[in-house]
Structures are given as structure tokens and as C-alpha cells.
Image (tube, rainbow, N blue to C red; front, top):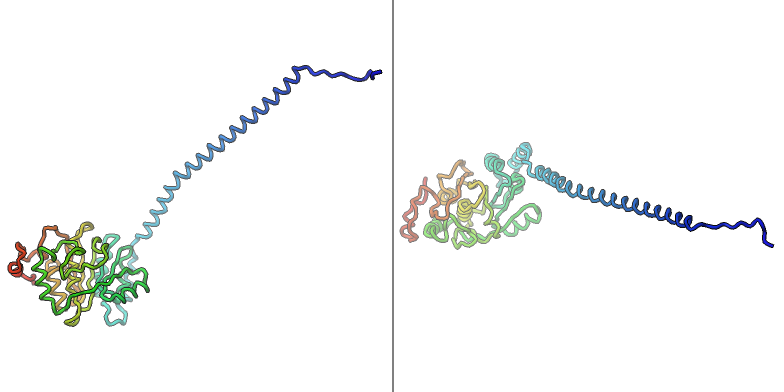
Length: 323
């Protein structure tokens, strides 16, 4: 006999369908919410990345500009005066005096940055020239390859090259004569000396030395105080050609000749740098300012009679220099 308290529960199909529908709506809602959340995160991340990319170059440019400005800042006057003072007070017998250093320093200070300085001779003032040409390019040329290597090893900031001179001081007159005979050919005042066979031209330096537009050239080497010493005939001639062959820059080159009291320095200076370009002189220092010339120019000095023939007889009739 069955228990009369037993209850029979019947679920209508509609009720089952309604519960399933509610679960589907809930699942759909959660899916849409999740999708919207993911889209929001993706959009925000992309916007942040875009802002970072656009802002970073600006920040980098600003930082780079600040760095360049700081790097290119001129050397303070007090530092320059201190360097000049201690350099001129040294006990080195072969040092320059303050009166000799000051004109060169003044030109370097006024030189547009960066300034290109070429120095013939590794001397007591080598580190001074490097320091005074702050932010500029300084190259040294010396006759002693071992000393040039030593200076570069001891002072890695120094850019030095050696050159083997083939001239002798006692040959000055003959060398000038040959140069005048070849003034329309190998010894032209405007040319690339790298490809020149002129005996007075220095043509065995690294290629890039001939490509630089030198603003200031200092001739303080090689040795020239006895007949068989190399003398400064080649550096003076080479400096005259480099200055007149400039392609860019201001168009002017300051050339300083040290030991100006000696015959070789004065005679070769008059011949290849020219008296009309001498703007300042003392017993020991000559200061020339040369302007670039056209490739069709075949005379170093304006007051020399123009050369119209390459024959030795006619070339030798030209005046040596102005006095």
C-alpha cells in the first residue's frame, strides 16, 4: 500500500525553458561586458603607446639640443687666461712667450665653431693649442715619427702625423726657383697637393688632411736652425696652397709663422704667403691672412707679375717678392 503522503511534482516544460533562457542571458551579458572591458584596455594601451612615441622624439631632441649647447659652449675667458699664463711661465727653453701665444689664442677664440687648426711641429705648446681650440679639430704634423707616436700614446686626444721632409735649409734659393718654374704645373697656388709632384708640396699625409678647410695654420716646425736641417720651406709653401685652395668656410685662413726673425721664414713667407697678406709681425711671429683663389690663378702674390708662360726663362723674370 503506497504512502498517502507521497507528493508528485510535475515540472511544466515552460518553467524549464525559462530557467535555461535566464542563464543564456546572463552568459551573453558577461560575454559582452568582458569584450567591452578588453576593447577598453586595448584602446587605452594603444593611445598610451602613441603618446609615448610622439613625445619621446621631442624629449630626445630637447635633450640632444641641451647636450650640444653644453658641448659647444665656448671656453670661459678665465680658463683661457689661466692656460696662457701657466704656458708662458714654464721653464722650457723652447717655449713661446705670452706675446707670441696671445695673438694665436685671440684668433682661435674668434674662429667660428668648430675651428679647424693645423699645426706643423709638436712643441711645448701642443696641449695648449689642443685646449684653446675647444670643440674644434686640431691636427699636428711632425718630422719625428717616434715622437708623434709617443704623444698620441701618452695623450690619446692628440691627432698627430709624421712626415719625412726632403728639403734642406741651404737649398732654399734653388727650391724657390724650381717652384716658380713649375708654377703653372706641379707647383700651382691652387691645387690638391695629394696628387702633386711639386718638391715643396707635402703630399704624403692622410687623405682627409687635404679635404679639410683649415681656418688657422701654425708653422712651428720642423727644425731649421742649421744648413742641413729640413727647414720650413715646405710647410710654408704647403700652407699657402691649402689656404688658397679652400672650398668652403669663411674663405680666409690665418697663417702664423714662428721664428720669424730667421731668413728662411721671412723669405719663404714673402714668396708664398706674400707681404701684402702680412697683417701683424714681431721679431719672432708673423701673422698672415690669406683668401682662397680661383683655380685659374697662377701667382701666389698679387704684386708679382702674372706668369703667362711655363718656360723657365720667362718664369724666372718674375720678381721674387715684395719688400
